[in-house]
Length: 349
Image (cartoon, helix red, strand yellow):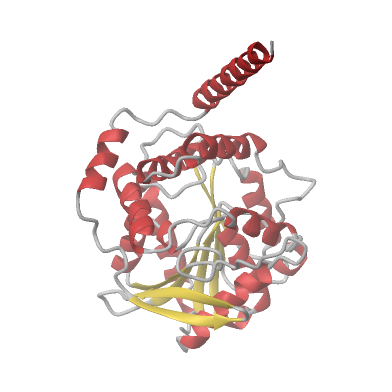
């Protein structure tokens, strides 16, 4: 009798697990048919060198922060400090985007947030006493202090946009201009549509589908699926090959990916509160860019940032999601170059 009950229970667990797996599989975006072949090709061939600039570390409070300075081959017209989205390290910046900025004459600083990449992973992090946006801003300031750079253009995406905003608030004399992309001045603003819980749920499903068995191929597929989720209903191709190379480079040549950093970065945002009031006092040139098809942070958040920040420029990009795909690279980098050229008198770095 006990054996029959055990077998029945085991069968039930199997059926429920299988049904859950099928549901997860059907809920997630379908990757293109050629994805497996592209990943296999990347796994089988030598990786390109993705760190091409001057590397260094700085100490910021209790954290060691890794950074890279990528020089332009032209006479520099300015220095741009890049701040990535939640859970992402410096390699999250697409090579096509970096290449276009260098070609336009800009020196680039990119760095690993605390909790990511080669920066300290904050293993003693405590939810009761989390780090916040001020800490992430202090990390960025420590880098430009170490490099003895007076002012930089700060450019942030998503979480990075919030860090860039906080940098402009805390240290306006060190910010030549602010560029906030697909971001928000208050993610909990009750007057605006909230962050999409459907997208958050898909991220969880992607982690279940590809994260439980952490092979190199599965980790690459997890990142590709995440990009497909952030593309939303927009219709453009994923940059599969370079993204697969970047993920594999991180796994093999750096520290890989911290499974706990998403919680840390989320806490940093939630405990920092609204930036609306201090943003309304900013005086530096500001550019707000947001994709109209952003499935994660509704474009109304970008529009409100533009309304709040004096004399800011708001650029809407039709058919773009929460991403920096090569499809829109020329449009975005041309917009940035025009903006910085017009504001060049504000740059002293």
